[in-house]
Amino acid sequence: MAGTILITGPTSGLGKALAKALAPDNQLILVGRNLEKMQNLAGNAGKIIAITCDLSDLDDVFRAAREIQPYSIDVFISNAGILGFEKCRKNSHDLEQTFMINYLSHYILQTAALETLFRNEGLIINIVSMSYRWYSLDFDDFQSVRKYSPMKSYSRSKRMLLLLGEWLAGQGLKTCSVDPGIFASGISRSRGKIFNRMYDLGKGLMKTPARTAREVTSLLDSRLEGIPAGALLSKGKVIDYIHQREEIGKLIETTISLCGVDVEKRIQQIKSGQA
Ligand SMILES: NC(=O)c1ccc[n+]([C@@H]2O[C@H](COP(=O)([O-])OP(=O)(O)OC[C@H]3O[C@@H](n4cnc5c(N)ncnc54)[C@H](OP(=O)(O)O)[C@@H]3O)[C@@H](O)[C@H]2O)c1
Image (cartoon, rainbow, N blue to C red; front, side):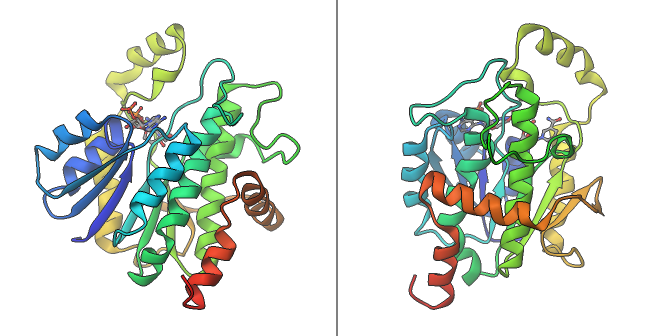
């Protein structure tokens, strides 16, 4: 496809492979925390806009959201993610970082891009993980800080992104979530030495980020034709996922009250032409 594609986390693993694959034919908006690495990617093609943002930092995410708002965007790929830290880490706003990076930052950035996505009949692709099944959401412990475990935090943050995609699909946007399967990348970086050593041992058996990126770009080429709105895809197939309808409503409501960014109100404004 040819258009303007925003990718979060374009400096390693899948995001980098996607940026390389998509740069020749598309205008890219890259959102990452390392400007130099993003500029090096720009060396491969001229049509790259780099927006620096530490997705763990709420103020930085608000700034980046203001920066992306004026751009016309056709595809928003929520790719950046971490596998959780060994110990619970919070930012200066008391927000747990896996939750912040994997979910909340994407909620805020996607909300900022909604007007253009509606106008362009654009797509949102959320990179999630089948680990979303391991934990349902706990609204009494929304950020999973009680009895913290990195995988609980990771699993729930991916579940939230998946459910956000389904909610936005219900509002009329073309969205889909993709479980990319296991591939060799830098994802183990946030974890301890033993985890990293084991990950490195297994890396040779994993598929490459470039192959994983091809699976995602083929979706873009088809513009999600034939894929139900808000679907979850794993190994290229739409799979049923289990959740309760109320879980989505409660997720949106709790997110709005936590960060003050009101996605429902924003959509109402866009639909009534007041945006
Ligand atoms: N690898 C797998 O087997 C696997 C399986 C299922 C799902 N996934 C999902 O695939 C996506 C891509 O992960 P990957 O495996 O390609 O991992 P990766 O190689 O570690 O890449 C992650 C990207 O996210 C960025 N990022 C992390 N923390 C950030 C922050 N605070 N601010 C801004 N950017 C930040 C990284 O930036 P830096 O370069 O600056 O660190 C990097 O560009 C993730 O959402 C992951 O959950 C991966």
